[in-house]
Length: 135
Image (cartoon, rainbow, N blue to C red):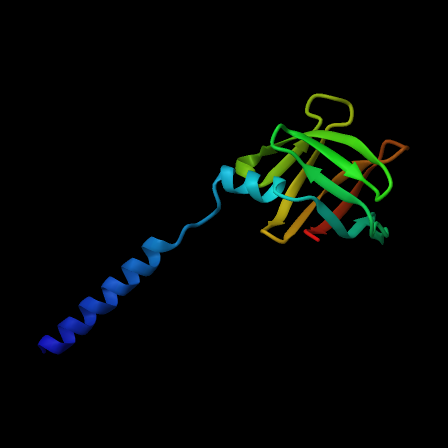
């Protein structure tokens, strides 16, 4: 009987320790570090269902809220960016005519996936999705 109680106690203790150590979602500081620590290279870029080859394009997010887009030969200042929705999304160029919001599908130390809508030249919103890696 005492052995059974001890086993139940140990099981509850281990479950409590396991659940207590679960960190949950990364903090905003952790997300900012993951996003800005190194440039991202596009692995896949799909617009309106069509894959676009961007093997040399790199996107660098900076802690000051700016970004730089380079194509291997040229670098151009990108957009101003900030986290939204508790870090589950990004908004680029808030308050301008080129404002764009994206959902972060995945953000890890090696992979960034995001999706959203881009307005095309006819004014129509076209879905896009990007997968970027650190290389």
